[in-house]
Image (tube, rainbow over all chains, first blue to last red):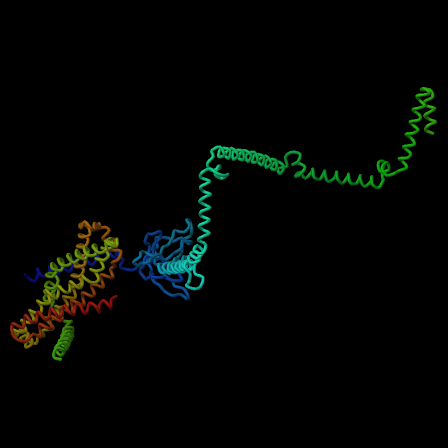
Length: 331
Length: 250
């Protein structure tokens, strides 16, 4: 092979290699030779968990950037997020660290925020939400398991006793049954006898259970009770309707109770009655004097007697002398 | 003790050869035909075997990964496993192993023959240093060709994995899903790390093979022994260096 051909083949091979390097670069790095200006956001957390540089940032599940840097800032940890500048992040959007899978890997999930919310500027701090990670959940589950174990231990101790005097519920129950076996046997025999009687239809309970007539009567009684209850309900409804009318100021009673003008009139009437009664009590006015003055009573009696006599005279003398008699009787 | 002495002598002579060769770096433009010839030997003629081996490494990786990961319901990640494995480890290492077996042995055999048949001595008498015309063009050529070979190895391996992922019935992953997973987890930085590794491996393999060839003593039988020694030493050095270079790059 001559040198020219060899050189051409090496050149071809080299160019192929360069082309393949370029294809790989384009495929894996999206063809970005120089780092374009990205939108940076700061997300502060109490704990970044397993988040690391290069982890994804997803907006509603779609990759929009990556974690550029993780750092400590005072008493909290910060993740500097590298966001595609073409994608605005809402000002009230919040970021949280989400576990990508059980085998590890985390990403930052950002929600959409409120529509119309102004986008966060470059370098702004985004709101964050703390989410429990697998370790926290496992720790809580561990605590729960321990509590469950303790509870079961307490139950077990209550049932079986702790080996000390007295024993648990099971031992006490066993002792109770053993000591009272004769009584329990007698009780059981009595119960058996009672159930036998009921079964045979003896006694009130037996008849109630076995007699269909009694059963029908009982059902009829229940129906009557239901009807009565329905009537009572209707009565109550009527009463409620009446109360509603009264409360709304309708009708005489409603007006009397809830109408302010009527109330004032009644108050005024009562005050007048009281004033009248006071005057009557003090003997003021004609009626007061009539009630309280005994002299007036006596005078009236004398007058009535005179009138009586006059009338008697009229019967005897006729109308001509009537005026003279009246005058005499009166004066 | 004697073995240790031999090892130390080997290390010393290799370092000396490196510095002697680098001292002639300025003469490389004048050795352009030699450089091209070595590029042809190291790169162009090695490409077929690198491509074939890488393709089947990719297929086996995908098959094994798919078989194991199906149990976890994670066979969609085959692409990422093949992508990262080829780019970071298997691509550069297998290329270096093939370089040691195919090119390194040839270099040692050629230089050992020249040494045994006193051609090196003749060059030295003519004040033509072997490090200048025999070693430097090879070192320069391997530095240029190794990245190309490694990238080709990676791409062919990825392609082999995608073929298995698509056509093996128990896997049945579309090339789109395979390459999406590969792109998701494999970054250009990983490929570059692999290329850096390959550069180190290739440079060391060529340097060691040249040194063993130039230090061959005895008759023609020693040529074969030198080739064996060169390949074995190269393979051991590739694996030992792999650990340390990975440690540095991770």
